[in-house]
Length: 303
Image (cartoon, rainbow, N blue to C red):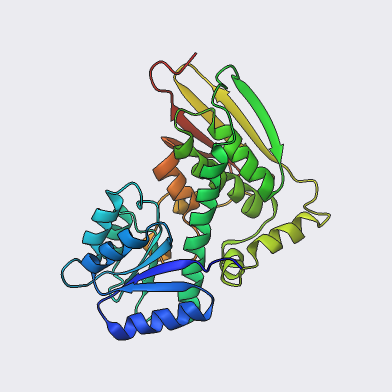
């Protein structure tokens, strides 16, 4: 039997910690707790190999949530663990400050149990996907600079994962770009070719049926022949990746940054995080069903 996923909850209110523990254990998670940021850091160091997500209160004595974030982001061995900031203060300025500090998931207090579990599930799923992509990188070789141009066609989520890990090896820093490539490929499949709307994905993620829905739609006649086209081009100073789906396009402008208005949603961060973490530029073209991503080549890597 697999060991349950461990979550660290940090809050100075015992009643809140007790409620979080009961609600999360009720859906199968293992919860360890801490009373403030100082205690939380010590607990994290003792359990950093186990913790897959952190529920963090913003306002605490000794070390508050923002101070804890500075500490965790400065430590490479735990910097990637997703943090869900729980706060009673939902002002956009505070959410924006948290986003700048690396908090991409939010939970307002008092929380709704189903909203909370949906956000936690999303954070853990995103982290697991990124970890899986990083592990898959080890299976590929790095001597691929002879390839200057390439074109690919994919349809499924498995195709997207494989192509993400493969293509990332063409870039100077594979671990930097693999997440962004994966997110944009998945976006083109789910929202582009399969027509899954933002609100539909919210419900699918909440009910943990997102992957099932994608597989079911791929089997339908109206979607069976749709392909995602991916073009790779290595120039003398940069690498460009162009991804084009067969969908109707979308209003991409609102997703280029992580919006405080959507901070408590269980998805909707992929494009913004791709821009922030993976690429130097992301440019959507036409109606929004084509995106070009660029990464500069470091000196001496262009051939």
